[in-house]
Length: 223
Image 1 (spheres, rainbow, N blue to C red):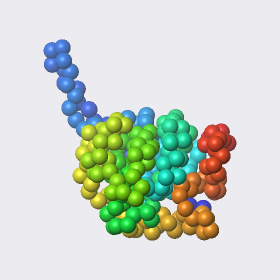
Image 2 (cartoon, rainbow, N blue to C red):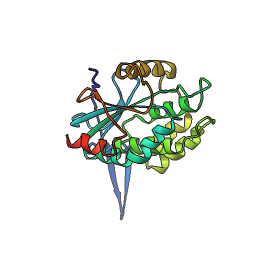
Image 3 (cartoon, helix red, strand yellow):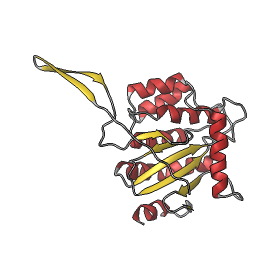
Image 4 (cartoon, rainbow, N blue to C red):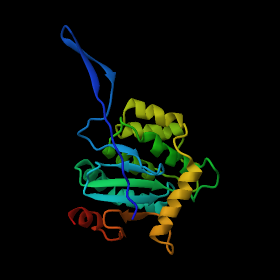
């Protein structure tokens, strides 16, 4: 059984300067430690959202142009964000790009944006909302959103200005080819007969989840 591990170190430095009846805040903004973090998985090819000590730990294998993956986000995205936020759930997103026709296609660009978002200035809840926004605005078979359009989505769900700028640059945050190969290997280990997306795997119980049960997520966090 594979398990994700991470050490999250957070620092908050804020200087308050009072001038007359105004107050200025100088310094670098960091994530509120009371909010769930987001970080890159130990193997380097997944993005983790949620508290380290969350009692339920799952992986979601997803393709940015997969319409069934969009359905998953439409049906359960808000619930995933809620359970991440209250500390009941930790989610590792493992993107794949098998629907791309070019090396720098739609799926590759969206996948890279997920890794650009994984930093101290983004919360796990924001990251989940970002995923839902991206998948609900996908363009299967098309060029997909530009870097600026992806950044606009990040801004729309409330990410920090620094995160929005990172995403708008489209700078390489992960080796996309290696990411696709490694994540497919992990997916193949789970099911070598019906290997596809979306696949949701319960790392805590070491089992694939039946996401076509309308109550799968509620049952999972209550188990």
